[in-house]
Amino acid sequence: MTRLLRIGWIPVLLALIAGCSAKSTEQKVSGNESGTITNYSVRGVVQAVHPEVRSVVIKHEEVPGYMPAMTMPFEVRDTNELTGLTQGGTVQFRLRVTEKDGWIDQIRPVDLAPKATPDPVDPTSQGTTHRDNAIRMLPNVPALNPGDALPDYGFTNQLGTRFKLSEFRGTAYAFTFIFTRCPFPTFCPRITDHFTQVQRALTDAAAGPRRWRLLSITLDPEFDTESVLAAYGSRAKADPAHWWMARCDFDTLDRIAGHFGQYYAQGATVAGQNHNLRTVVVDPSGRIHQVFIGNEWTVAELTQSLTEAAAKR
Image 1 (cartoon, rainbow, N blue to C red):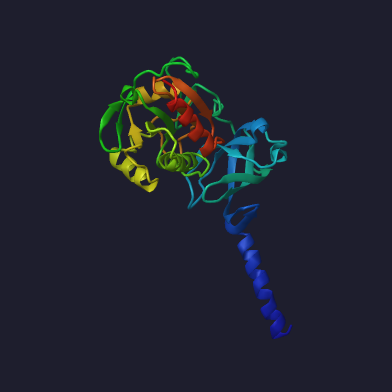
Image 2: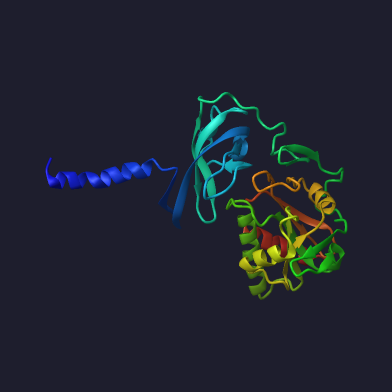
């Protein structure tokens, strides 16, 4: 073999080595969207399959260098990926993440391990949550819908100031549920980024409402102290004049979460945390104006909802 041919094999060998890695990166180009996709090879156990919303809930292993083992729903871009998946089945899949998005594909059943026992409760169901592996029922509080009055709950914000929701009377506000250690880009990071953009939109709107607020309530008050919330708010560019990060005791958290089907794991580690997403708009009289379920709502939709709520008297 000539020296030239030997040199020619080097790029091929390097490519083959890179292809065997559990982590890889590539450029993403889709329409007007571009950026870097980081790929991870992950294994987990299927907890629930929801083709109607292009989602599968997987209790997955640790993703080294990215996030701990967790139970969470993952989006698929093609519902054919979900064909043949069964609850309790072990799967191998590719986790694909960008700065603000994440999904999975190349889902393949793994036959080498015996069929695992899924968690006893579907993590996407309403009214239940986990403390790591324990099951806990949320308080029996009424479901609240648009037009219903929101009870008066107390919190402490990132500045260390105690407040009650009744102090927001005369102001339209939106609140959501996050925790600062949430790693996946389509969960808490996406909601917080949306709040950052809503804050900017309402601040810059010449004809927008004058009295409005945003409130991010942590699901992890044991870790998310005032100083942790202050740092998180600073990174999100939260203006304390309009946007507070807040914490409360678990009894209060259970109750306000229970009104809207927001579940979470009380006092869990990051690996044990399992939660869904709710964002609620309240009008100046303290009544529910709108409830956004999940993470598919847009900045424009929440901005419009807050503007409409502020116009109520």
